[in-house]
Every structure is written in C-alpha cells, then in structure tokens.
Amino acid sequence: MNMMKRGDYILIIFLLLFAGVLFLHNMNNIQEKGTMVEIRFADEDPIYVSIDQNTTLDLSHGDLVNILCIEDEKVYMLESNCRDQLCVRRGEISLEGESIVCLPHRISIVILGTDKGDIDALSQ
Ligand SMILES: [Zn+2]
Image (cartoon, rainbow, N blue to C red; front, side, top):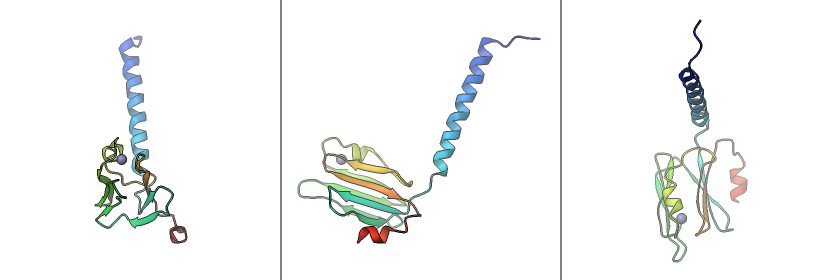
C-alpha cells in the first residue's frame, strides 16, 4: 500500500480551498437582486428610486458633484469630483445590501431588497 505523497496532501488542501471558494461564490449568487435604491445625502431624508428604471441622477450639491447612473438594474457612480474617487471606483452594484459611499460628499447609496414593505412609510 502506497503512502500518500506530500504532493497529494497539497493537492487535497488545494481542492478543499477551491471547493470553499466555490461555495462562497454560490452564496453570493443566492443573494437577492435589489429592487429599490436608497439615496442619502448627509442627514437629509433619503430618496428612493426603483432600480428597474434607466436613469441618471444628479446628486450634486453646490460644488460637490455626484452623478449616479441606474442602468440595466445596476447602479454606479458615473462621476464625482470628490478627492478620493472611491465611489466612482466602487463600480457597479446590483444586489440587496450592496452600497456605494462617497464619504467626502456625505452621500450613501444602498440597494434594498424585495421584502421592504415599509418603504412608503419610511419615505414620508
Ligand atoms: Zn466619492
């Protein structure tokens, strides 16, 4: 009976890690697509926009430029003149719970899911 070689152990560990990564990836895919986009500026009341409309929102306040795009049920910051550009580099978000934050401009965008029956109450 052959002893397992060191290489075999490495292969098994690699396969286990690979399976783990696949599992996590699938978990992400299970995450629900969002239906609403919540947009907040500073401590103003948030506004809500449906994610299934293709639109461009100008969230600029004075010299603070933020242009948000909703396109094919994906949300992304098209343009900003903030100093860190993290919001622009965040790229597209589309799943419930994902967010884009522009810290220098105090803007946050969060995708909400389907089971938010109290959205109307919140936005009043
Ligand atoms: Zn930004």
